[in-house]
Image (cartoon, rainbow, N blue to C red; front, side):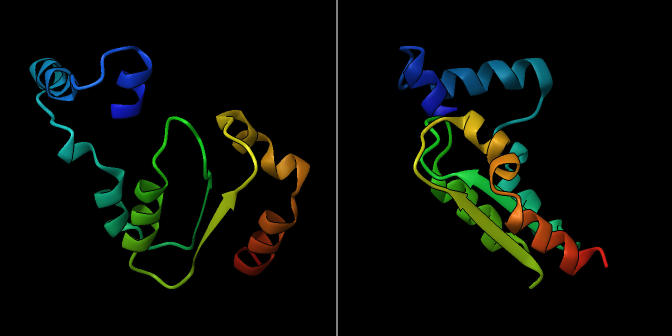
Length: 107
């Protein structure tokens, strides 16, 4: 959310945004954290992310991966782009990592 606010010219307003969200939903940012939810994953997991995505901090994705408590997990970084949409096209362009994952975990 910090990066999105900065892009909107509202840097430094994260606490204000969180208070508005709490007022409308009753749920703060900490309880919405996918990094913490990852601790509950118990199935083989393949995460992928554009490393230099302008809206995502790579350390957040790495933490989510690190918090998955199983050994059957993989983190695939998409390099050489800052475009989030390249992540959606990655396996159309280069399907082998995903095909290998499926061959291992769906056979």
